[in-house]
Image 1 (tube, rainbow, N blue to C red):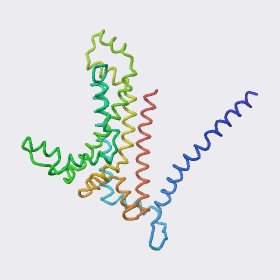
Image 2: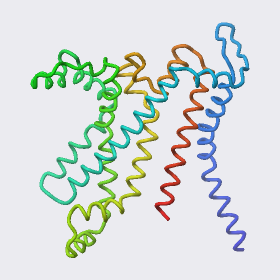
Image 3: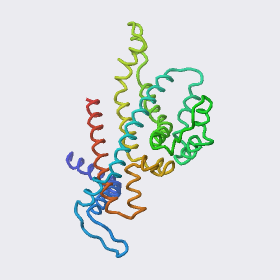
Image 4: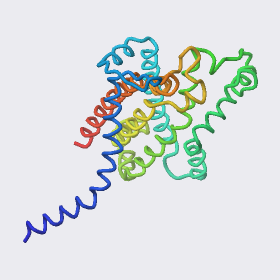
Length: 292
């Protein structure tokens, strides 16, 4: 009877979750398989035909300077934005730790950028970055410095996009770290103070080691999210100036929807997918080690 009950329970479990599992597999496996297949073809939309070219699409785009620049920009943006967002999120969480008057209002102000639409944020920052009437160049003028082409200078454009992402998503890191700090028993800190530990020792030898799992989690989430950057580049710079802010996602968009090179766009998508999967595997292994 026990075996029969167990089989019935398992059958009921699979029957409940089977529809959702089928939908998830269809929405993930089928598109990935289609893109993988298309990456080996070259499409002629005028004649409505396609030609099998094998790995030519991969060889061509990997050897192109534009793809290499897009990959380089993506890596720089991903790691600069992710690490700075996590660092600032941890710093703000430490500053707002404990109970004090105005904490709730301060927290609301901090998380406000995260709840605004990305397009609205980009519109606001375009005004800040404006060469003639922008806030930043106005402030530079007050100290006697000349104006800066925040979005038109090749040396500054990528940094400017990174700054917008940091402003929007640092609150996300702050919320996760703050939740982790709230779960630490206060008695632990009180015992450390009784033993004569200074605030810096409590922070670096007690708090941060306990929060290592949360820090690694938010770092993984932000890394994987920033690697697919598209919206801010599209809204702020359009990949310019001189492709200095073009990312892999923007490269794929232009190849697929501007030039209709679906084979090249699919090949670039597969390369991006494998790199993101490698990053995800790296972080997951780190998280599993933290749990052990």
